[in-house]
Image (tube, rainbow, N blue to C red; front, side):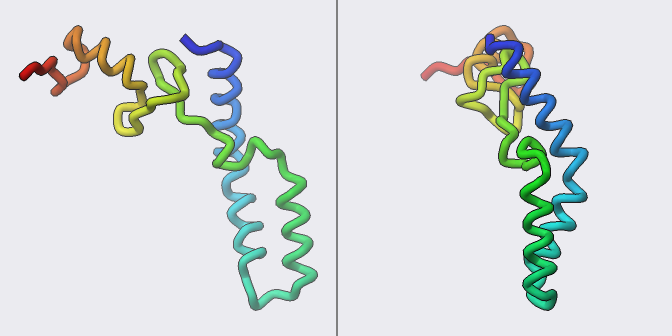
Length: 101
């Protein structure tokens, strides 16, 4: 089980990303618009830099919903390989059965 503080910090980051997504997208559109003057684009760059860092989508870490483990994460199932194996062996994940050959 991961530290509760790390899991909660990641949840807070997800919330911040969702709140600031529209504002960040608008500023990025201004920055990438070649038709605008350099001064306007630079002002938009400064505004984007002044926003909180945790509002960036890349700051969010994919974590297992069951254990909070940050590594060996399956995006489709939103859980780690260890949790998947335990739940699969106990029959709690539909479509996953123990195999041997």
